[in-house]
Length: 299
Image 1 (tube, rainbow, N blue to C red):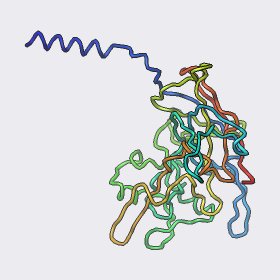
Image 2 (image 1 turned 45 degrees about the horizontal axis):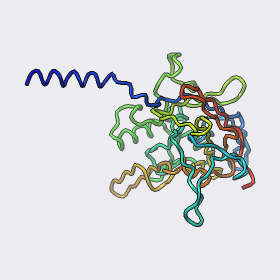
Image 3 (image 1 turned 180 degrees about the vertical axis):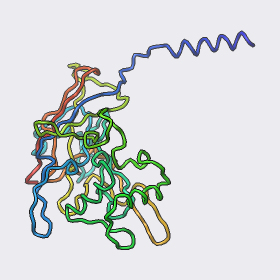
Image 4 (image 1 turned 120 degrees about the vertical axis):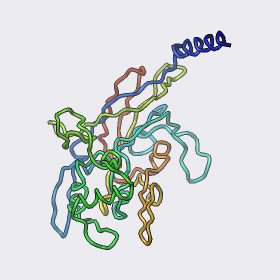
């Protein structure tokens, strides 16, 4: 019996070292947005103010597709398969993807679908931004919230959290290694030329090539620009996600729709930004760079 167990252990160890030759890797890359993607003229009480701010950059959706076409819509879009139901477009059949910035549960009902991760250095920036765009936030009792620390404590209470890492609303990691957490540690950082740049990782992605020509899949993406009315996001389904209910207080967190990769045209609105040229992979080792530089207008 001891000999059998030793033999079995040897087989397990040998199996761990066996190379299955599966083309699965973490895909790395960079997304670039023009400065104007984070610039908007905001009107509050009749006063206009042109603002350039990372908080005007909504969630960026990145997908890997068989190909893209510029003849389906006014903007470049992933190729679409056949439609099997009247009134619904066909599926784009993505191989995988990710987002840069997620819709986060922001602990107060009025922040539902208005907060994306990776855009705020601290809680005060969340509260101050809503006031800056003319949408000051009230708590469950109708009182205007002016303190980021109040929001932080509400989040800690609802989520039973003890650190900002657990809440995942603000920057809590020194990404650039300068020993301080500031705007340089957000998802998008503004370069000296004014453009916004973000790095991304698509984790454990299987690589696919066209059977005939050997060309790899194509990376394509778009940015959900915050609305003009409440500065919320169309990619967010407001009545789903984490929900907190306590006595007569209900807080719906909202979450991103599940088919953003499969049917992006259902959610792309006027004012959003899309990539006009996808990045086509030649090998799984490619480091992608994609520019999301076309503003959708006239829909």
